[in-house]
Length: 280
Ligand code: PAF
Picture (cartoon, rainbow, N blue to C red):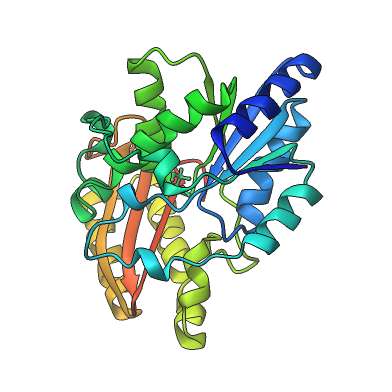
């Protein structure tokens, strides 16, 4: 595996991959890799694409109040994991490469970026979309892999790629979970043992709501009860909502593309999860 730390090194590595492979698959990450990230790499490698994984803790997607410095980092462990999964190139740019001091251009978003995480973390998706657009261009990727765990992020990226006519395909990959249902996340390591014990209840509430919806129960009542259960379990919920999957617009009744999304704080850790309506 080639480890590229400068743009000329990345370009040389990607040009070589183009000569030997029909497609380049990109897995954008912020490092602290877990089984969910490894699954994205595995999907890309299994598709036959030469796989490039980026590791860049993107300052533009953190608000001033969020602790960028606390974001977990494990470069040696990450590189070993990427190599073991068959990644061809690890791309580790520095901040000056991604955001030259004179840069003034960012991606402005509406549609699926409004509401939910857009409200809870103002500016977050502008940062995510801007860095992803840069990574797509740097790598010249034919496909990029994103986890369904961050459902809203996946829809924001899909919309951006469609709207900016970017020549790549966005490939969604299902959420990887612990045996007790907790969605894998780099933040799980910050849960205390007691919080870790309670954390799977977020997924359990989502599943119960899906079951109720599928059985024809009233969505508003189910969501109100679900939020109350989360509070009783020690969560401070930011939202528990039924939305149209692609647009993230709230909807009042179950529909084929509907998604249940939830986010809340358990202690100091913010957890996100979502399920499709066929998941219960
Ligand atoms: O999901 C993430 O880890 C980040 O938001 C991403 C897509 C790598 C952009 O920094």
